[in-house]
Image (cartoon, rainbow, N blue to C red; front, side, top):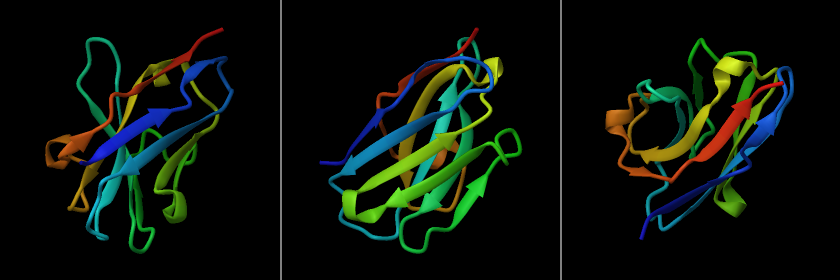
Length: 122
């Protein structure tokens, strides 16, 4: 059974940092891609970045490029999202999900975690 569990969210001041973790289990294929997404109240789900497990290939959307870093720990079946210089507009529920395509389109991701809340406020 495929499972993804996010953790590491919380309340942080503007300019601060958080590191999110996505623990995965139940995968039987090696070529899967893990993506991070977020959804703010009243807005559509937004794709942020992804990493391919096999070779570590990454992709970032412009909104987070230079501030967020995605990485993987294959031994622990975990994908991390380091978020620096956080802004109030980064406030959202953050999700990880899995796909077998190199894509940031949420519609191409088949399994999702339940999300973790990130709030950036002074």
